[in-house]
Length: 117
Image 1 (tube, helix red, strand yellow):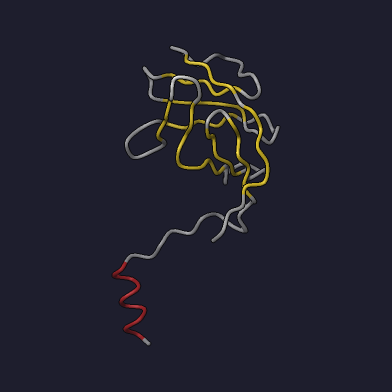
Image 2 (cartoon, one colour):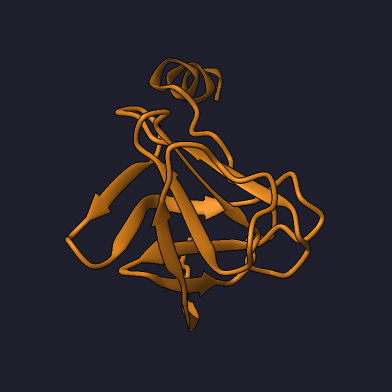
C-alpha cells in the first residue's frame, strides 16, 4: 500500500489545561495533563478529531517550536474519511484509502489457511 503526500498546510498548536468548548480551525489543542490532543478535521467538515496520547496510541513530539503526531490520523468513521499526518506544525495530506485499513491476519490463521490448500 503506497501513500503519497499531496499537499502541505500550516497548522498551529496550543497547550491548554482544559480543551475549549469551541475549537478554532487549524489549531491542535494539547492537554498534557489529560494526555489528549484535539482539533477540527482538516477537511472542513467541522467534526472534532480526538487523539489520545499514550504509549499504545498517538505519540506527541514537541521540539520547542513545532509539534508532530504519530501515527497518521485516519478519520475512517467520518463521511469525509480524511487521512493526514501532523508533522512539524504542517498538515501532510494523503490519498484516501480505498477502504478502511485491513487488520493483518495472525500467523496462526495464515498457517491454517496455507495448510488447507
